[in-house]
Length: 175
Image (cartoon, rainbow, N blue to C red; front, side):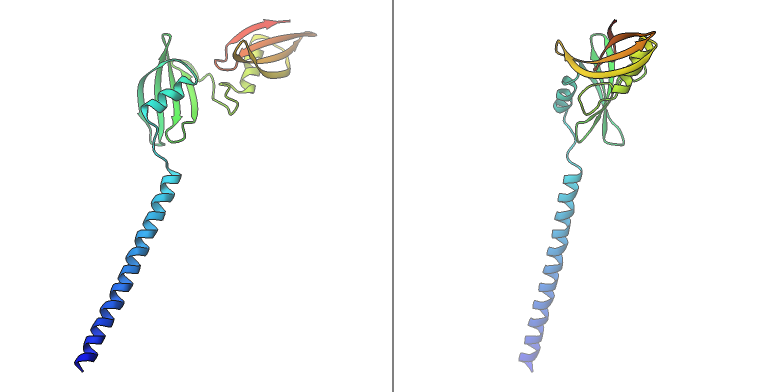
């Protein structure tokens, strides 16, 4: 009888330990998988030096202030040549979402092509310069600077309006 109780106690302890161990291991595995998925979906935030490198791709200014908003976006204030810019950067991917010259309306939103203003913005800027009908738009590199060449027809004449693809400034108009 004593052997039966001893075997029963041993068997019960072994079963309890095995079940507890498997359950605990499963919970740890699930926690590890959840953490790994979270790390993949939410990589670490960018560092100050990474932010400066991103800013340097668009301008040679100095970072004056950095704020992280509730959407994990960095709101960066940059000073360049006595002008102040506000840059919105995704805190995890480094994608520059917007770049604004302070005390002015936003002058562009970055596009996948690397140009600062979109094609429609270039057309709009060209039409503010030459009132007419847009016929063609090309994004080209001119002396190391990306520009939009907008062809506008006005009064039976063609005008070529050159718009800086980074700043949105009309650089030249010729017919």
